[in-house]
Amino acid sequence: MGLGDKIRNEAEELGGKAKEAAGNVTHNDRLKAEGQADQVKADAKKVGESVKDEFKRD
Image (cartoon, rainbow, N blue to C red):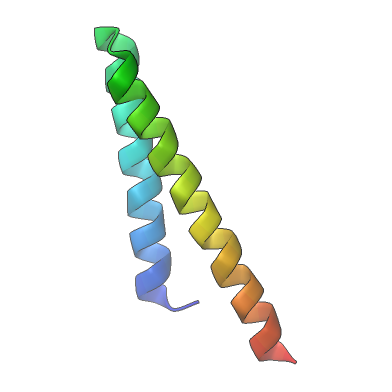
């Protein structure tokens, strides 16, 4: 995984956490759900990149 990919994934995860927190504070369920979804997407991307990295090692 390239450094740029890692930074983008972390930024997406942090953005999701911020959205979720804002949704909690404002009692906005939609914003909270969007934040959670963003975090799941970022985690999935991290897993996918890790798998690619493992195959490149061999």
